[in-house]
Image 1 (cartoon, helix red, strand yellow):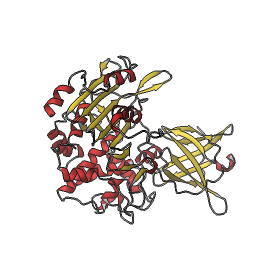
Image 2 (spheres, rainbow, N blue to C red):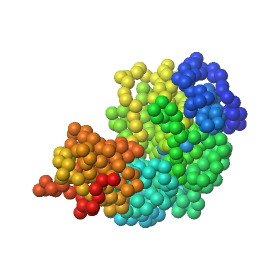
Image 3 (cartoon, rainbow, N blue to C red):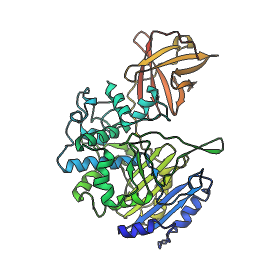
Image 4 (cartoon, rainbow, N blue to C red):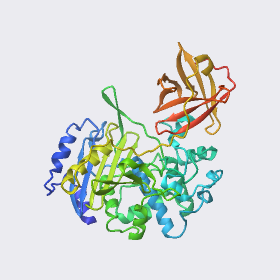
Length: 481
């Protein structure tokens, strides 16, 4: 099978025999991807047959290099299932246990009581705050170089969780950065090297790596692109933190990974069954992403039962890259979409194709529901304090956990949040008791008062619902820019 895949994946396209015209579907969908645009690599595998393999658009707009199924993309959060699989390999060898306190290997989180266990990191039930929120409001810019060590230092300063470990589900990238470090400390080698020896090389995934060195060359790499004011711009990605993201791979290599779930070369059926099993809270309740849509978490994947068919899906988004990896095990269908266009919508494109392709095998359709995200938020904070007048709100606010200070000031009655590294972040009233702004990601700012009504600080609420407390401190001599 792997020889067949290897030979076909190098071809520019494949004429499938299904009654559903896959080429017509994707040619129509991606007809606007040309040599002067970014694009997408597509692979569809059904059973042991490659149904479709094609590339659209360019991997590099400066040189006009076309995309094919061997083009290397960064796949964002699709990386998480590989990190989780590395943990399960260590569990199978008896080197770690799901119930162990993670602080045994990660003293950075030894402060928390009750203890965060390894399973809590895997299941997104740790309560740890997301590193994207921590980094952006600690003063890191998106074009900074950020490695695992930067995130570990921030995590070690945290003194509050979103909820007691194991009591709720909340998607947090921090969990999987910590798991990457756990693998490194237990295995005595980097996550990249461990997976290269144990997974990538055995499966013939010759173009796959965890990018833990931002100066390393990546042959045949696609570059991610933003789209502003009617033109494409290079999206700078200097990150080398791994575990939650950071996997560079190809559509062809991901197809080999997906095939291993059906006929294991790496791991065995027992390991894979445990890996695919739904995550739970400590109470035994499912770790729901969205109960109304029947979407649960399963260690770097989301499980959904939809129209009588089970699917395992995760999307990815980082630095202008977009990714979709979906498996329908009962139909033995795998759909892979990798893009370097920031506008690309992975879930509707991938799930939409599968629903059309499998239409005759699925139960009757229900009302179309919104596409789920790969995040969930828990909001346990009471009603917000109304916006105070500018003369009361203006001042200095600090988070010791982030070692970060902001000044809130007003210019012509317009609020501005300023930081020595991030510059000025204009705010506007959302007419619901909060200010809103953008610090790469959208956020809201909600004031906090004491029992007497005195202003004590504000919470920054990022786009995932993450809350970061900044306490009001004695005003400095700050007077604007």
